[in-house]
Length: 108
Length: 122
Image 1: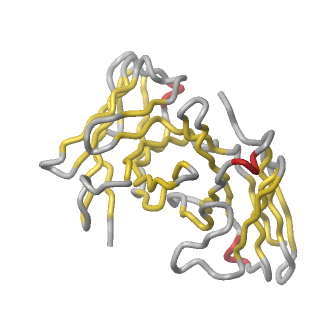
Image 2 (image 1 turned 180 degrees about the vertical axis):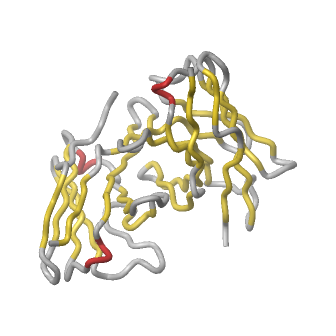
């Protein structure tokens, strides 16, 4: 089935900036949403509609979307940011919700 | 604060029907602009969308599961339900229910249940 392309893993040192990508042809024409999932927990929305943050999500989390790639950026990474991250879109051609394969963020 | 809670058997025999219910509290399932969805996650794997339902009963299903899935809503109980027929071991997963907020981008899941593990046994 249709899956958005994410790198399986990203590693970053504490205090640095992590960038997690989500790829699809012309994804810039869609709204991209991002979820954080820690072990044993349900996913949590961290970015919606490309770059909006839900209440309670730190400003360190930001998003962008253009062309064939959407990006979740986490600034000043903390140990607590270590988690799996998933992107998601609505595919209007198939009327499907589509998730990316997920990226494991490791804080070194 | 909106809360969602999945309930149902944690063990289902192969070839039988998996049935789960999601109870919504702290808000009405009949609110406009919201759909309600089911998502699953096999152990150690990624998220897979199963389907969404509107309070009126309008549904969207993942094509890969459509022949086996039924999602229904009971507004009087503020609940929606999932039935998955003819299950096999590959249906073993944590099943989540979630609220799907729609906008002109399509939509996103902004509230999730804690998830429930369903194991299919032979």
